[in-house]
Amino acid sequence: MRIKSNWFKPGRPHTPDELAGALSFVIYKMGDNALKNTRNAKFEIAIGIQYFEFLSEFLLFLIQVADRIAYRRLSAEDRFAFTSSLANRVAETHAENESRLLGGQLAECKRRFIGQLNLRAGEYAEFGYGENGPDFSFFRYLGYCIDQVMDKKDNGWIIDQMMSIEAPEAVHMIEKTFRNLLETEPRQTRKRVASSGE
Image (cartoon, rainbow, N blue to C red; front, side, top):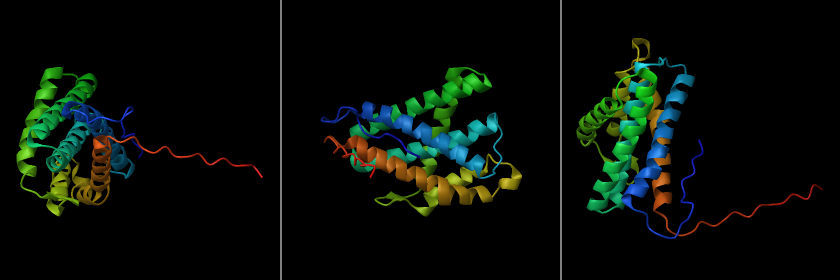
């Protein structure tokens, strides 16, 4: 999956709010991609409540990942501003989609997402995340959370799908995007190689 992860006009550091705005788009896209991949792998995820429960858990995981990267790369003050803004932006996008497709009040959908995020933040805090990314238990906890929303026939199997395929790919993309968004130097443009046709 290709995602544009560089600023249109490089050359200055970006605020935590700007970083959060750019990364929230990537996070939602990664969550949606994980959902599509999982359905393509023949796991049953029904359109409706189950669909949004799966997506919600994956988004909550990715927000935790982004916060851990921010811990390494930003000051404590900037990290707090970044994570707060990121959580609100992802919650708003998720709530807009959920309320539009399932009904319900936008504010209530967002409140429920933020409540679940606060719960998961405390739970994921028990697991390590180092320079090389999340430890085994960090990934496994995502698998456990997703397993809770799946049908019985997929219980257990979904954990492996999350741990070995979806989560590592998403973490790699978030790490790469965050790194690129922090760059202030213009990127080298690639030279096109013209073919002579001979």
